Image (cartoon, rainbow, N blue to C red):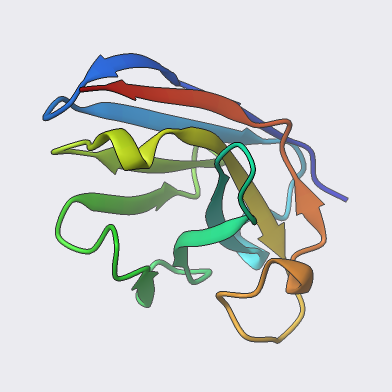
Length: 124
């Protein structure tokens, strides 16, 4: 099992930046595919970004491509989401997630472990 704890959320003006971190427990961090998802009030949870075990394959939602960067540090058991050029529509609770099994990487139901979430609010 792995436990995930997100941090780094907050309130930022449009055009600003935030970096989210997700620290994981356990010794097998490098065996997990990691993803970031978000959920805005009244909306479905949506995929944001994901990174393969060694970090050599990265995926982004079209809505964040070119603005967000996902990365991981397996030595620190941490995955990051650097968010630049933030927009009010990026406002949501952001969750990191982990999985070992195979599946469509953008589908939240294929992830087995989730953090508690961190709030990101972008003001206009």
